[in-house]
Length: 319
Image 1: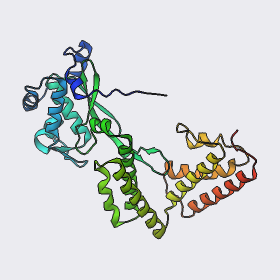
Image 2 (image 1 turned 120 degrees about the vertical axis):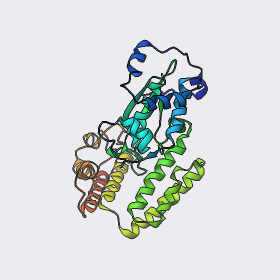
Image 3 (image 1 turned 60 degrees about the vertical axis):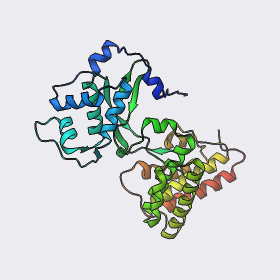
Image 4 (image 1 turned 90 degrees about the vertical axis):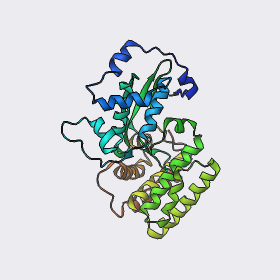
């Protein structure tokens, strides 16, 4: 599949047509009865702004003064949640920020909607896959701009904006995500040097960021050697080694296949060994209980047997 995501710049968004389809107005401008000070704040924030884009940016700037937290106080019974967030608690989760932005924009006559989904997760530099967890659930806002459609806005402080993602080079976001993963690995290893993760969000040239990532990775490997490899990390490493052995003989796992789907393509002579590694990997990644202490060793042994079985076969193992 090939997809193209349009990313119009601010100049394009400010030049869009003023008309909004009636169906969009009816659905995405509707609001319940609002406290007067919420409507007044919406009018004050967007006064004089020439376009929907500029009004959304004005609301975004105002919300940047609020604090992001998952431990915000619950609004008192009967209180409007957005009003309580904007004027009393001034702190909340991503749902509170997104809800407040959508309500303020609708009150100002700008079609807006709250969107829920997931952020991109964490890039695993060993497997080459993004790991998306329940903790990556997120909420943001889309604003309707005539001529451009629904445009994403990130109202929650601390999360990357669509503009920063669109303007970052491929090397920058890969290195940034790799640094996040390496920083987490250092933290799990109990390293005081995990402060290196502070450079994860720095906007530095790709070459410098890559140097930081390699340095952090080397340090994490040294620490792992000193402290021993956790069972789940050992299983993951064994699975990556198994993929490398099979790839060298012509059998490569495509990114769209699950571990179990890939296992079904492994020829019978080596499949039992691949199955042992795959099942251990699935338990580590998707199981509820942590692996036992010797699971990593068994997975490594299975990779050794698989390598020997591949060596005994002639030519390529791929069908």
